[in-house]
Length: 273
Image (cartoon, rainbow, N blue to C red; front, side, top):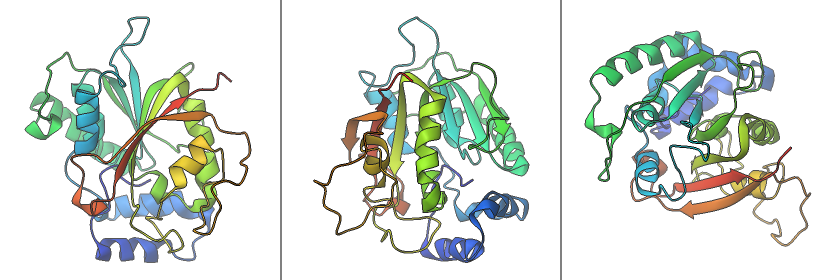
């Protein structure tokens, strides 16, 4: 799917909208792979890990820890990991990290980046509160997030990061996204979302599709992720929510592509099923 680095400008977004226009939803994964294979990953690439995620990992250890209660090193997943910036950054902060991409070309690019970056990491992998630690393991997997053929037996994640993965999906796939996140996280596991784009009218075509109010509706309310401006927030919601929001802040640092509207949210899987 899309990279986890952002969708930088209006012209790139227009190109993406045209690329997916009138395409059946079931062919969208192939359309993303085509963009990788035709060397068009610059349409979403931001060239560095998420500053907002860096700051969360370094500054909010009270909420996001590297080691589980049993003393084991935590496992993280970045679906739609792109060139692997966030995967490598999380590994440099001590997580064992898996990057998932639909494109075999994308996986090859990410593996090359990780090999070089882990050997000689750049300063953008850390923020002002840098704490050096033993890097974790990195593994890139080619596969479809919504299928199970890429999963290893018994592998579940303590943390999953989503930036431009949800906004790359057709709105009809949003309930599947939420359900899949719950499946892949351990009970008590955490889903970190840098919510983007919040400035875009949700009724406009994508990708990226506007997500204002979508994360809350999907994860905290158990809704279908289709949010209407006239919707009454007091209307009863189906009791399907599997997450509790434990953090919702405007990050001090984020990408310029967010136009200053990005919000950082942290959802904890609270069900035990």
